[in-house]
Length: 251
Image (cartoon, rainbow, N blue to C red; front, side, top):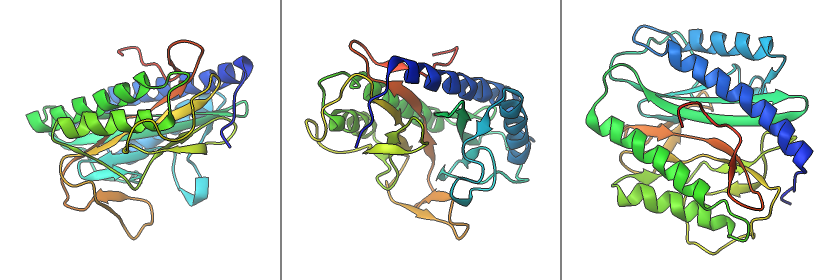
């Protein structure tokens, strides 16, 4: 069942989302060649705790750390370690926060130093797919209108969307109903209503949409080992236009 949030609840989710975006903006300042992902994780953990919040991913279903990282061919759920970022890498960072009983969730993908034109294009298209999906977060639309907008944006630009992992509802739980596919036909599924809150998160691959999970049971790679990018916003359906709760300063 899709939960409808009150204005008070949406404001509580917004406060969690503010900490999420502040964390990601802080991490962006530290992304450079030579930095380890475990250092980024420590920066995120310390900041979230300082804000009086709880890292949402830490110990969630056994996940060991605060952030999820995805370097190059990693799609999602990479575990931070002592690997150093290199010039030309791209890195996705996913951050979740629980604050006063409510969750916020967002992800970005950025380049490390100078990156290839194709890597930049993949990042740009994935971000575009996110916003095309958000444009469909309108009262009266169908849930699959979001999915269709994401898929068509990726495919029209020569990329493919991951099918195995999806967006989700969010509120007093990190993952609530519904699951939000990043592909499919329009005009299907539940009708969107004011008060629904979704984490919209396209994962777009340079090559095939097929993925595989490593033996650590978390890290997801593209099957062909080509690049992948990931963006995510937490969004509320309103009586009017979509309300992005994880709003960044630069977009």
